[in-house]
Picture 1 (tube, each protein chain N blue to C red):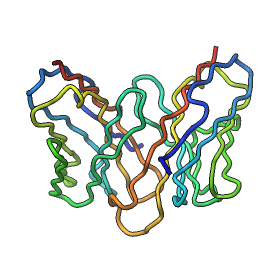
Picture 2: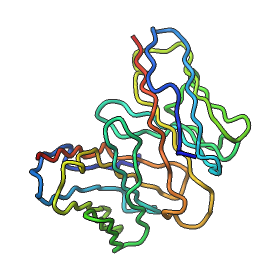
Picture 3: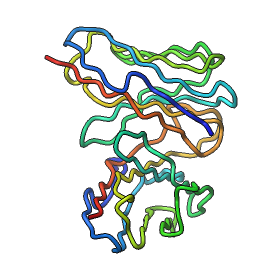
Picture 4: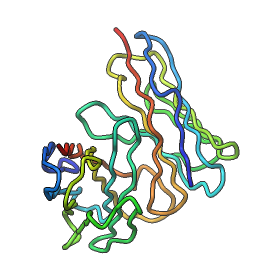
Length: 111
Length: 119
């Protein structure tokens, strides 16, 4: 059974703080790791697709790293803003049509 | 095209009733996915269509669930004889089929979901 875990489950940070979350996934049969942001009452939005060990991707104040050998990815948010409040999901893909999602990290940025 | 749409956004039904949800993917996308998300969990894969062909179906999809994509465009998900445990958010996603490694070019685009409550 493939298991994808995310930590922490939730966190509150102050506006301006930087923060990071972890996604752990099976290190075998790795094909791709996806990050999504899901704001309340909206559709999940794709942030990054990561495929190669050592990948680092950045979009504005958000960046992500990938370690396929040890099976983890970090998502970083620099200088958190209230609009960053959302659930951040990672999804593991082993090359099939099936994506295995983690339970998400719920971030609340306090103004 | 403004993205993936789902209808209805909310559905309240009584146990034992049948419900049907619709998903309209982005028009040029030939891959379509259904997921279910229950409280405190991430989205769980239910089924996958390549054009009109249903290529994979999760064991989560009991015989009360059926999904179709008759013309390779919109898709429907029907739940018969609903149970309280079916209460969840049902998400649809679509993606193009450009082959090769996953990339931003063939990423999944999600709809807003249909929230089902079974009383």
